Length: 436
Image 1 (spheres, rainbow, N blue to C red):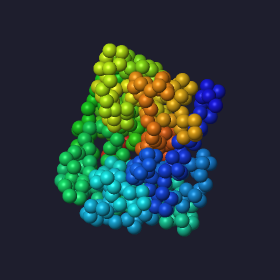
Image 2: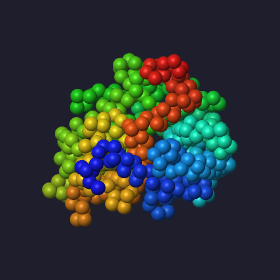
Image 3: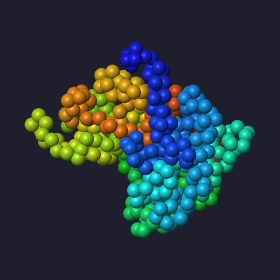
Image 4: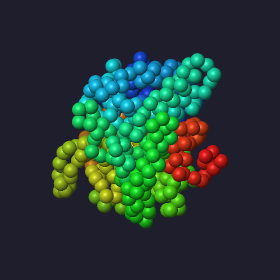
């Protein structure tokens, strides 16, 4: 059915249902590992697992999966992590309560020589805690689910992850030690700091959050002022679990702003940049935007209409300062739905009906596309990614739900660890009043 023939609710229901199926198909049911992408032979991504754990409650509410099946899947996941090897051995699953970014789909051990990732572990913990909030029945399976989720979150040693500094390290490797980067500058790490501050066992000090705030960049572009992060996903991931409407930390109180409005401005900035289209890419405009970290058609150089164009592979694309090679990500548009539905919904319809970017086999949107990169099979959309990624699919499911019902936000409002993290980060106002 054409999106033009559907109500907004019908369109959202179809996209959400089709996208949710990634977390049914691309999963090892024995251990709960979720593939990083549907490309054959890919390892699991712990961020994708965290998103799956958040998606299952939504699936229950929407009738995509039974409650019993969701509990079975989540328990398999939590039991695996509970019993997995935590050591400094190079083939372990994790260390100090954190986990390697990529894990083998079958064994669950470290894959691709990946780093012990603090941010991806944080997304995994967020998913565990969301599942624990939803599955609140007084029976053995759901009790065990809650116990396992909380115990796994409480095991993470956030103080170790600081590597002797105020801010948190990006990660660690068993042979070379900590990575050289710390989580500084506004980005998706907001959820990391809140969960780290909320830990009852190895909490981050308040000074860690203040140090992170001190690294923010406040910028003005296209008539909008905001805490800046170039790729759109930076303004979305933490918002999957935390309702930032009306609550403010020290930095935001000084700016008379909240992070929700900040993300709205980042979304509007995307559209304004695309309308101006300084690099003259095809199909950029009011309904052609969505620039974020994603895969593209490169690396390659092509001369098109007399202009030498450089195309990237995976790149953290951003606006308005780049990089930008004409690659757009429909999932990044949908994940901004709660912030700016008035521009997201028309763009979704444009992507479906005009650009033909929704898969005909019922698997939701293509992950990314580049209309400038030549493709005789689809002259409008040009190149499009042949693969889907769990880290992209999850935000579609969750942010559609937060727009429709606020389910994930409501669940996490009841999470005592999240509340403690917000309290220690000195958030005030809005729905937090009377809870802290």
